[in-house]
Image 1 (cartoon, rainbow, N blue to C red):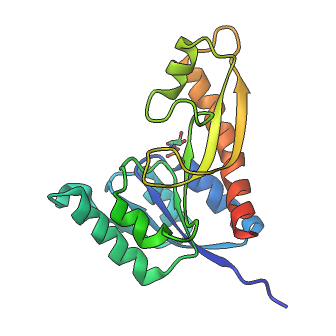
Image 2 (image 1 turned 180 degrees about the vertical axis):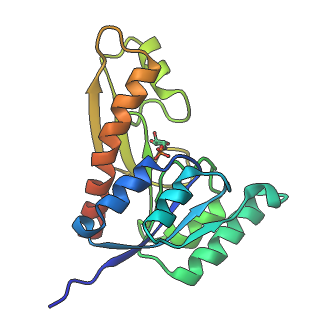
Image 3 (image 1 turned 90 degrees about the vertical axis):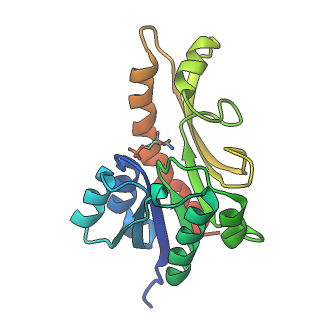
Length: 193
Ligand code: GRF
């Protein structure tokens, strides 16, 4: 019997290296990427999607007067696809409660990857904040999205030791490499229930 693939959409704003690792692992995860959505026209991730023959969609947040209107444009488009999972991969917009409620009220449907060992260091500049605090390790977390920033249930984490001579830049690189392993694993885990 043929395995049914789960449908996902991926939201990006930039380089899309996590998107690339998801693309490279589609067979292993058992997914069909229906569309890659970007809020920026020049996001390199759009090229990655096109190279893989995946539909792309740009919905520019700057075209809307409010966050709510932007979010509703996203909701309308995503609703036409009816995905099993919405994957945020370097999507640099905070989503409103309307978006979360539209997809995630009773089910765990929106995933994010954050470059820190949550619940530590929500928000930006995570690695520098870990160095400043004298931490011995940094890392990444895959978590569900809720109405509170970077606070939903954690699905998987990976840590990276801070070595002598590391700075925010070297750590960002090391953590990103781990993210590329972590995100496909976490998506697979969620879709397999
Ligand atoms: C990653 O560090 C991710 O944790 C954060 O944004 C970055 C996206 O990188 N949310 P990329 O666009 O996947 O290369």
